[in-house]
Length: 126
Image (cartoon, rainbow, N blue to C red; front, top):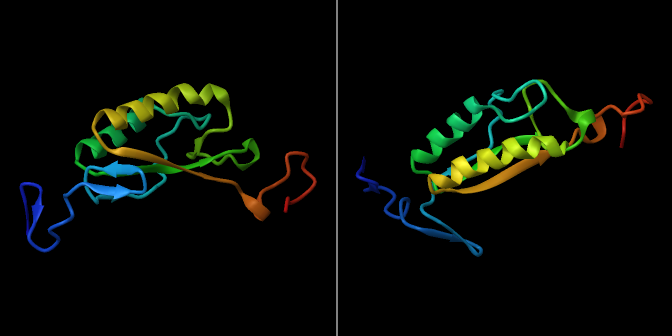
């Protein structure tokens, strides 16, 4: 069915696509998946960079990196963090490695919402 970047079944799959003002090189999208490839602080590791760069080389048009927590209180082992400015260096390296291979990049962020524990330890937040 698939050969040399073409599809007999889905002829538009490998053609450029406009998503709003963003032009994707094709319609292949990698959704966010937690990889557990971060360090103990929730920072990007070389192994994580290599993981995403390999998928970018595979030819997808858009990669959405895994869900990242935005508040320290929502930190979970193995989850990517974006709450600390010190983590930005690794995130920039990750973005550069992905975009170097051609695909566009989205990020995904989450909070614990009503189920998260308060920083002050006074129970749940809402």
